[in-house]
Image (tube, rainbow, N blue to C red; front, side):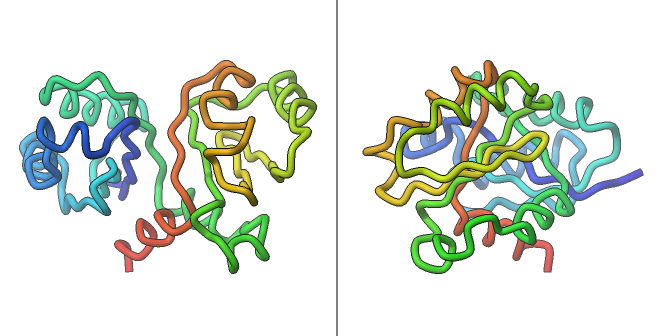
Length: 178
């Protein structure tokens, strides 16, 4: 069965553009057997169609990224996964006022109950946090840079690597499907 996937590649930005321009990433994905490939922004958001289980498709995308000499983690979601996050919209006031300060961190595996508790216990700042099975949604009212709950800290608290996207990016990714 073919699915439309959103590949979220960790650590893509200006420092990697010379190694992996988005046009070349799209071409490499097509050569790897992915269809209807598109990118959103230049921050490692790849939308494509492919058949196979999530782990197989993630391996394929990981191989494409590695072909550029990059060792970046890859996180996959379907459009229905992203739509569910957008529909949930846990912080409507923040989303309306400052959507670039509302982040969703994507991880591969279920976040275990002990890690959930640890994360919620450590949150003593102004941030609001909610979790799904494989995402952490966080409102940074004063911005990420001044927070003590930066994505690297979140990773340590839950014991998993992840990649984060702000609300504006998620909205742009979701529009590609329409």
